[in-house]
Length: 393
Image (cartoon, rainbow, N blue to C red):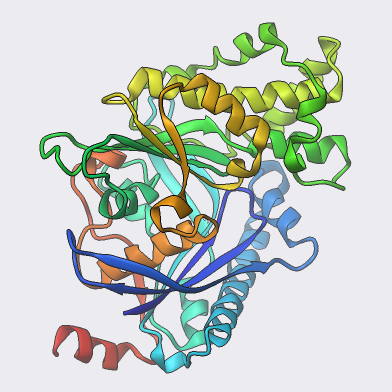
């Protein structure tokens, strides 16, 4: 099946659109990216999304409108990636859209009450004519799961090593990990959870320091000029989230702009310069990842497959290599996957599994009572022919 996967991550910096060829069924599932693009948001739209993530700055009327506006952009990204791949719309079977997370309601006991992604599937299906599956996370929450990280199931299907334990570590706005037993181990289950802040605190701090002129610390330029405040770092590591046992998830509701503003003032009150604040926050991400491995990894990790924007932060990567000795740090490209477009591939794969009435996650990954079929299907113009062709109706 040819499926377009759509993703806008925690940083809300652009839409990733990947046209994928997915064939077979687990455990012989094959997934290949035919063509992928990064579709930029119009000027100011990222800031608008991030404002909508802050309860005091959003409102029901604005949420209603952005749900539709974002979906229209997702549809435009879909049509663009199909065109650039030199394929016709009638050759595409499905769209799998993650949407944009605005809120992820984690209760005090660590359970997830609700999760909210925008990007109306009806708008995407109408503007493209392609049957669309979206709102994947809410079904997992409904059956007692965390609703995330859903990438863990794709890791389970595609990235297990024949003999070695692997950690697939994403460092996006939030960090998340999937611990994968080797194929030779038929008794161990995978484990996935959010490790804590990825780039969210760093990026928000950079935006505050530059009054929005810069969105991230390119090439660790500022962090490399600073020194790490060990006392402050130890205080930051005392946050209760890091001690909570998996399954667990988090987001900008906790590790977002509000916390970044507070930490910036805290760092300044300690007499730290801007570079040292950024250096310490960068080390916080690396240390919380290493600490999560030490606390919760089911076995010794021999390989780490690193993805997300954080893999381009040399200061962070070097820190990780020092904090987790003995584990080889690989890129997704080293195992045959385009790192820039992995999450878009994941939602194409999940759409494929949902269409075939198969689970989109493993209970061990999200804490759900069982692996449920995920997402909501909005028929496109191709719906009847797709049913006949794939379900023999």
